Amino acid sequence: MKFIEALFLFLLNLFIFENHGILFDEIFERYNRSLSEFLSDHNKDEKEGTELLTSKIEEEEQVYVLKDVTNDYMNDSIYDNVNSSVNDYLKVNTTDGTNIDINNIIKDTIQDDKTDTTNNVLYDSTNTTTIENSNGKNNKDECDHSLGSIKKKKKKKKIKIKDNNNNSNLCDEKNNDVKIEKGVSSLRSEDILNPLNEDDNVSNSSYDNNDKKTHIINELEEEIKGKCVFNWDIGQESLLKMFDMSYNFEINDVNYEDWVLDNIPTKNFSERSGRVQEMFKVVINSNDGSDTAVRLFVKKIPIKVWIKQYNLMKKYKGEYVFGSENFIMEAMALSFLTEYHPGIAPKLYKVLIEPENIYYYEGMTKEKMFSNMNTLNEILSKGINDDIGGNIVIVSELFGKDIKKFLFTESENILSVIENNTKKMYLNESLKLLVRLHEAGLAHLDFTAENILIKDNGDMRLCDFGKSTLVYTYNLRHIKNENGLCYFESCIPSIGKIAYIPPECWEIKKLHKTEKIRNPYTCLRNLTDQEQRKRFYFDVLSADKFMVAAFFIWMWNEGHIWDKATASQDEIFFKIVENDMSLNALKLSKKWPRALKSIIKDLISLESRKNINLKDLIDHPWFTKK
Image 1: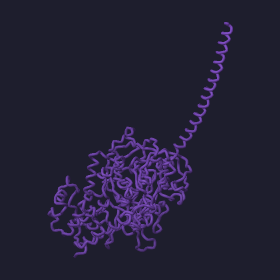
Image 2 (image 1 turned 30 degrees about the vertical axis):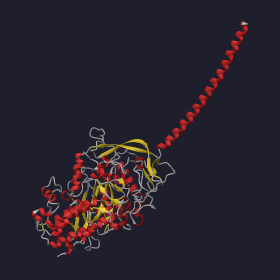
Image 3 (image 1 turned 180 degrees about the vertical axis):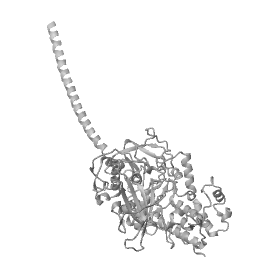
C-alpha cells in the first residue's frame, strides 16, 4: 500500500514538473519573442527618430540669450558672426537650386534659417550668433538687450487652420490632407494681391482663407493695383542687377582701382553706433577732352557689416529696421528707384565688391557669384570666415548740394536772402518728391534739409535712404494681418534728425526706457495682442508727414523753432501743444501766411495728419498764390 502511495506521489510530481517545464518554456519563448519585437521596434523607432531629426517637420524653438549694449536700440550691424573656420569647399545647393561651392558652416547656417520658428508672432528675434560678455559668459535675456544667441529645443510644429465650417483645428504640418497655398510677395501687376510667402516662420494665429482665388481685395490693394511698388523680393532683384566686382568696373575708361577718392568726413563715426561707412566724392574727366566729367558719390561699407544686416533683413523679409544706418535698404532703395522710378533719387551706377585680396574671388564666375542675393551673401560669408575682409561700395551720382548748403553762402556762412515765392517753390518740389517716393512704396524717415538735394537749375532729388522702410505689408506690427494689405508700422523710433522726430516716436523712446527695452523685436515677440503692441509702434507714413511740417518750418523760418518735439522737454513745443498745435502761440510766427500755418498745424497733429493725403497737398492754393 505504501509502495502504491509512493508511486502515485512520484508520478504526480513528475506530471507537475513536466507541465511546469512546458509552462516555463512557453513563458521563455514568449519573452524571447517580445524581446525580439521590442528590439525590432526600438531599431525602427531609432531609425525614424533619426529621420525626424533631419526633417523639416521637426521644428526648433529658439531661446535667446541676449547681450546688453550701451548704444541705442538695434546696432546689430556692428557685430561679427562667429563661425567655425573651414578649409575646403563643399558642394551644396543654394536656396534656388543653384549648385555652388561653399563650406560646411554656410550650409549649417542656411539649414538653421530654414528651421527658424516663432510662437504666435510671425517673426522671431534678431540674431543667431552667440555673443559673450567681457567675462566670457553669456548674458541672459531680461528684455533690455540688443543682440542674441540661440539655444534650441525641439518642438513639433502645429498650425491652426479653419475648415469649411469655419472651425479652428490644430494640425501637424506633416498632414498631407491639409494644403496651404503660399502667396507671392511681389507687388506688381497681377501679383499685387497675393500675400507674402509664408516660410517656416508661420504664426500660430488662425487666419481666414488666404487662397488667391477667394481673397477679398481690400481698398489698399485696389489702390495700388497695377503699380510697381517696393517690397523685399523686387528690391533683391533690382539690387542683384547692380552688383559687380570692383576691379571690373570703369567709367570713362578709368578703372575703379585708379579713381582718386576725395574723402568726406563721416560725422560721429563709430563702430558701436553703427556709423561705419566711409564716404568720398570722385570726379572722372572725359577721355576725349570734353567737359562731360562724371561726378560720383562713393560710400563704402565693411563686408562683415553688410552680411550681418542682410541676414537680419532676409529673416524679416525686408521688415527689419535698424537704429543705425540700414545699408541694405539704402542700396535696395537706390537700385529700385533707379530702375523703376528715376528722378526721385540720384542715379545708382553700381554696387561693387571690393575685397582686400583681389585674387580670392578670381576663380568665381560672374554667373555663380551673382546668381541670387542669398548665394552672394553665402560667398561673402565664406570670405569672412577665411579672413578675407573688404567693402561693399555704393557708387551713385553726385547730385548738386543739399538744400541747407545750397541756401547758405559759403563765404559768409549765413542764409541767403530768399523770396517767399522761391521758398514756396522749393517746398512744393520737395513735397512732390516725397509723394512720388511714397507711391513707389517707400517711406523715407529722414526727410530733412540735409537729405534734399538741389542743383543750380532747380532740379531736386532725395538722398540717404539708410532709415527708409517699405510702405506696404501683409504683417500688421510684424504679425500676419487678417484683413490683408496694410501700411507698415515700425517699432524702432530712432529716425531722422532730432528736430524732425515726431512726438509719437519720443513717446515710444520713453516707453522703451521705462520698460527697459533694448531690443523691441525680442521683447515684443510674445506680446500678440494688437492693442497692446500698438503702444510700441508708429505709422511710418505719418512720421514722414510730420517731417514735412518740420522742414516747412525750417525753410520759412530759416531755422528750426523747437529743439525737440516733446512738450515735456521743450518749452516752444509745449506752447504749441497748449494752443491746439497752432503756431499762433508763438510771436515769431504771428505774421506767417495763414494758409501755411494751417498746413503745418494739420501736419503736426497726429490725429489730423493720419487723414492728410500729401498728394492733395501738392495742389493746395497757397503754393500757387503770388
